[in-house]
Length: 565
Image (cartoon, rainbow, N blue to C red; front, side, top):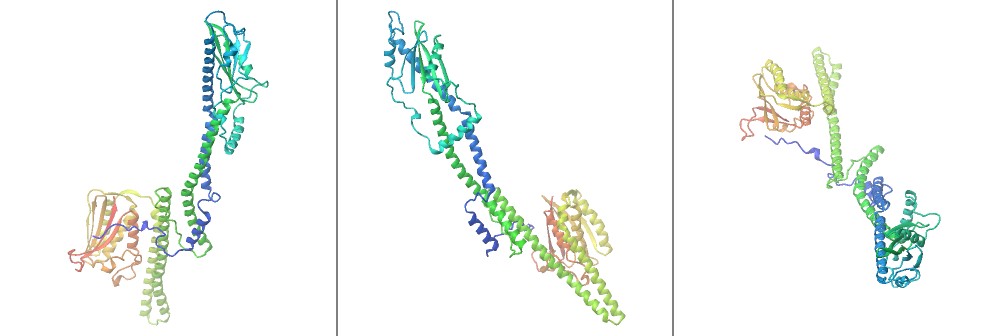
């Protein structure tokens, strides 16, 4: 048995078969050169990719800056540091108190507050206020020598870009967040120190922060100076206005600098992503547009060549393969229709030529027997034309009908049994023995029962037509794993070897002389089309007494149909 696998015609892709560049190739190359690596102006998809990537990044950074968790952390950290520093200064004052005699900070009895304050190593940006137990200011650290500050705010880390982004953010935050500006009357560091000192006279440390008229935060901490449980005075520390704001701005500038870097990286990656997505899609669309424009303007219409992107392991590679496969199938259908039209014209011209010759001769025929013979020829040709036109009409509608009809599950053996009973009766009336060897158990398949019945009716009637009186026709079926084989055999003259590869072609007919014109040659071609539409195969072969001698005279013909179960 020959190979029953179907051909891989549905996998043929357009493009590899041509060597000569077409007009479409030149247009595609020109479009690529004009487009370059990526043209945002001509690619809405690329613009969307970049825009959406940037929007996500902008929302992320804006959310980080809006929630501002660093600011709260810096405020708490700064507050704890100030509390510790104030308590350390209070401990220094308490360590200077003499254990003998009364202590009065106002009169400097037992403790010299000015000398003690001058002996402290204070950092710049910190003001110290000393109050007595009545809440009166005794002295401050104003004018005292300070050690140099090592705060990051002293370093200018801003750039033109970060200054611009800071300005935008300040404008945005002024709309979305309430103002931190203080009251109309400016609040000074000494006023805040006076307020917290009064609260600290109760014996506990008090911390407070507030904003001045410009919105800059001022930290103030007050802690009592005690001796034997008695409050002798209060030490108050106040930060420079806006010190924490400078730290927050420095932190924000670092975030914005990373934001600028992230934007540049995002734009670069977006361009690369857009190049790998938008450009191939643009090429696929351009190839289709070139074919459409060429065909619409009738300017050197040529076959469309879809770019081969099947090497890509993604959806674009799948799309390219699908488009190329669809285009190949479309061109195959166009070629088949063109060939079918040419074959139809050729087949119709033969009976028309015979009919025209008979009609022309009828006018000059004088004897009645000649006229009768010519009328028989005319009648035969008219019947032949009618049969040919009917078969052509059925063949041309077959594709669309196979798509429209719904497949159903049916018992193939039941259908074959009914056909064998009906067609076997007709065969026996013609003197041809008919045998059916079908399994008793049902074999169910999914398909179009009426169309498959048309196939087996055609095979059986063909087998009977080639048989003479005393010959036999046999139909049998067997199930083989996931397929069922249906075989129609006859003991007729067999099939000429040169015709085995042609009998399924349209309009090909290998008939005895006595049956000339009685068949259109479309029956087997239609049968093959129906079987392949069901995912099956069909082939023909001769029955020989031995497979070893292929030159022996055939004992008949055998047609095999394989259908998936």
